[in-house]
Length: 159
Image (cartoon, rainbow, N blue to C red; front, side, top):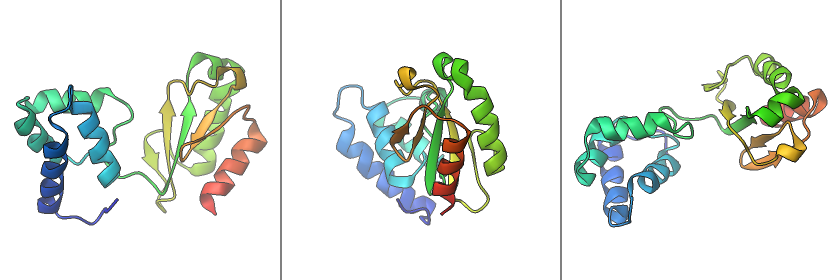
C-alpha cells in the first residue's frame, strides 16, 4: 500500500487492476476490494476509470462504494479496529464499550487518530454473537470484551 502516489500513478494502477479483473462475472466488487487492498482506500480518481472500463455510470460506481461500509474514501490508520454494533453485542454492553473506545482514542467511528495509529470502524456482525461483545483488530477477532480488554486493545494499537 503506497499512500504517496500521484493521481496519474493511481490512474495507471487502477487501469491495470480493472484490466486484470474485468472478465470476472460481476467484477465491480472484486475490483473495488483489490483497489482498496492496493491503496488502503478507494481513491476518487479511480471511480471514473472503473466506470469507463466496466461501461457503468460514475453514479453507479459511487453508489456501490458508498453503500458498502467496508470501502473507505480515505486512507486508514496503521491499525484498523472494528467494533461490532449488531444487536447481540449491543445487548451485552457494546454501546458502553463503544463510548469507552471513542473516549480512549479521542475519535468517533470512521475517524483516524491524529497520529495515524488507529482507525475506528463500526461493523455489523463479526459472527461472534456467542462471545459478545466483539471486535476485530487488524483482522484478528476478540470476543467477550470488557473495559479491561478494551484498555488492552488500545494499548496494543498505541504501542
